[in-house]
Amino acid sequence: MNITKILYGLLLGSIFASCKVTKDFQRPSVNLPEKFRNADTLLRGDTVLVGYREFFKNETLLSLIDTALEYNSDVLIALKNIDLARAGFRQVKLNYWPELKGSLDATRNTASRNSFNGAMAEGAGATLAYTDFTASLGMSWEIDIWGKIKRQKEEALSGYLQQQEVRKAVQSRVIADVAGGYYNLLLLDQQLKIADRSRALADSTVQIMQVQFRVGEANALGIHQAQAQLEQVKQLSSRIRQDITLQENALRLLCGVYADTVVRKLATGEELLVQTDQYEVAILAGRPDVYASELEVRAANARVGVSLTNLYPALTLTATGGLNALKASDWFSVPASLFSNVAGGLVQPIFYKGRLKLQYEQAKIERDKAVISFRQTVLNAYKEVADANVKARELGLQLHYAVNREQELQQAVGAAGILFKNGEANYLDIITAESNYLQAGLDAAQLRNDQLQNRIALFRAIGGGMK
Image (cartoon, rainbow, N blue to C red):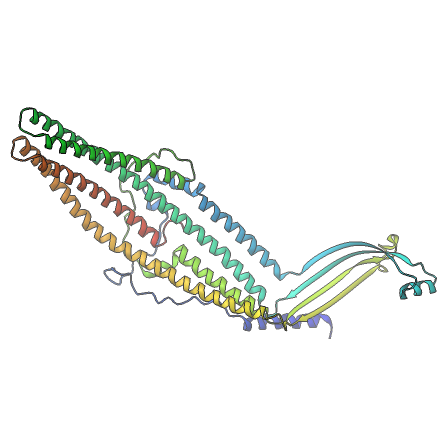
């Protein structure tokens, strides 16, 4: 039987053997409910996700998001991790090919007269010293009998795809954080206007009481109470201006640029795309973090396969050929200077102090950990959507009640002012009315922002943002 038939036999054997030793990946079961909690019915909801440019309607915000996606450090690191994973995948694909190396050697040997080679040389009338010139090309090829390289390639591909999903997850988080910070700024702007309005009311109250004090219709206690209320509103305005500056700095940091003023304004129409809050549970499979976690399980399963194949024999073929001569002038005397060597070896691990078996057991444990992590990621994703759904419903009710309260208190402030001027209400009534109206305005503004933030959270929870 010639060497060609042997090689063909080994290759065919490797194909069948590699299918039996290692196991292919199977997606872990997660037993998802049929619908999200708080969903009204088991309906077929939206499964098509839109990108952030379709979801956000505020052009100023979109400009900030684009800047963040270009300069944010976390995004840039994620892109570099993709480059690393891509390079690793390309390298693993080359494992199917043999290794080639070339060498060029010149060796000067001098034998001892008392050695066997020296005695033989003197007996033959040859010199004890000679020079050997060699130019060779060597090949080494490990035959993938058990599917080791196949699993290495699967692991590298999973790692590459995982980094792609991690990049999407990072970008989605940055988009949500930038949008959240932007609308927090708009909230603070609105709260500052409310505080300034209350400051004007409090200042007006102080002036009225000072007039009444001069004519004997108010006392010093009332003036001090009104002045204290005015100082409290001034303190609130100062704190809001501080928060605005801090939020601007944080938002600029997210965008990867130095702290400075952030230009902002409301959209001319709707701030966000109006979407249904009903989605199929299967939509979670498209979330970047869920798919990245699944790919980690796939990579861990491939590592189990690699560690398992290390327990089986390894077949390696080697071949070397080139030119060899005792004189440089005879180096290219072909075919007299040609030489070749072909060898094959089968190495079975026998005793490695338990390292290979331990590596295999550790790989299985790591795979089990990856499965647990994957299921936890799915649980977290389901919870985030369920939380956003209940918030969407309850925040709408809370805002309705808050707006009604603000309107009632606005009328109460007006009534208190009239009664106070007519002497039918005291200073405590007007201070209480103004304080309650201020807080009601702040609460309503906060709830409007909470609605926007929750819609952004739901958009991210279902995997929206990056396609």
